[in-house]
Length: 134
Image (cartoon, rainbow, N blue to C red):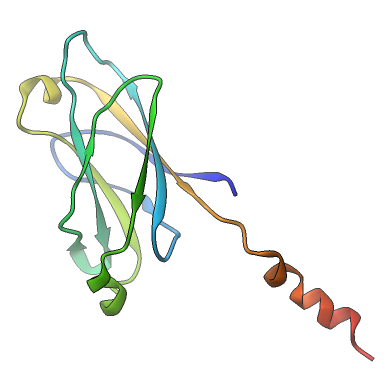
């Protein structure tokens, strides 16, 4: 059950798309940061889900970049999208536009997704068929 990199991107004041999420329901994301963080500077950004066909989740998640630390987020697919099934989902990241300090800083976002391995019965069910043939 490893972490898989979904992308690294330099945050700007415009939404930028990162890699596709592989989970069909709730994604567990580890978000880390790198870059320049001047002393006494309040850094903030956001990320959100984007689905195929230009559909966006209304919920924005806050990012507070800090060197050497990672944050873990649980990001579910909204109920309406489970029914409507808009296709693949991606992440988008941007800086907070409300503070010049946040815009002036240069930082990158690294996003990893926890990917669960298939359970044993799925992995070995085909082998049982091979060995039980007469």
